Image (cartoon, rainbow, N blue to C red; front, side, top):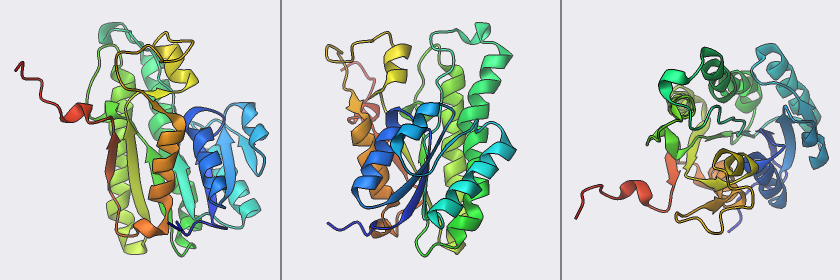
Amino acid sequence: MDLHLTSRRALVTGAAGGIGRAAVRALAAEGVRVGAVDLDPRVRELGGPAFVVDLADADAAAAAVDACARELGGIDVLVLAAGISGPVGTPLGETSIGAWERVFAVNVTGAFVTLRAALPWLRASDAPAVVVVASDSALVASPGMAPYGASKAAVLQLARAAAVELAPEGIRVNAVCPSIVDTPMSRGDLGMPDGFAGAEYPVQTAAEVADQVVLLASPRLRPVSAATWVSDFGVSARSGFPA
C-alpha cells in the first residue's frame, strides 16, 4: 500500500534513541524528509536537520521547531516521542517534587510547547498529522511509577484535546500507547541490560512502534483522529477475575 508519504516533511522529538530514532528511520524509509530534535547530541548522527535542545525550555523548543521547519520547507508530520521514565521503583511517598516536576516538564510540557510551536507549520500543510507517543501506562498502573504513569495519562489527554480542537483545521492528532518496548531506557529501568529474550511477558521492538507511527502519519488514515492506539498484545483486555 502506498502510504502517500513520499517527499512529506516530518519533525521527530526524542529522536536520538529508542522509539524516536526508530520513527526517524521508518519515516525516511517511506520517503519522508525528517528533522530530528533531542537533548542527546547523538541526534546529529541521523543526518538531515538535527537540533540539540531541552524541550522543557519553551523558548528553545520553539526556536528548534522553527529552525527545523525552515530547513525542511515546512512540517506535515509531527511525532512527539521525547520522554523520560523518571524514578522507577520509587514509592509514591518517597518520590521527590523535583523528580515529579522533571518528568512532567519533559513528557507533558515538552510535548505541549513543541505542538504549540509547530501549529503554524502544520496549518500550512495539506494533510497535517500529529502522532503522540504515550504508553499503556496512561491507562494501567504499576507500583513505583506514579510520575511516569501520570505524565503519560496527561499527554494522552493532551492528544485527545488537541484532536478535538484542531479538527476544524484538518489537523489529525493520534496517540500510540505501547506496553514494554525494548529500548535502552526500558532495559535500564527494568534491570535487563542484555535485553528481554528471557522475559516472561511480551515485549515489542521500537521498530514495531515506529511502524504504528508511520501508519498514523499517513494521509491514508484521514478519518482517524483522537485515537488511542494501544499495542500491548491484548494484555489490558484480559479480565483479572481468577477463573
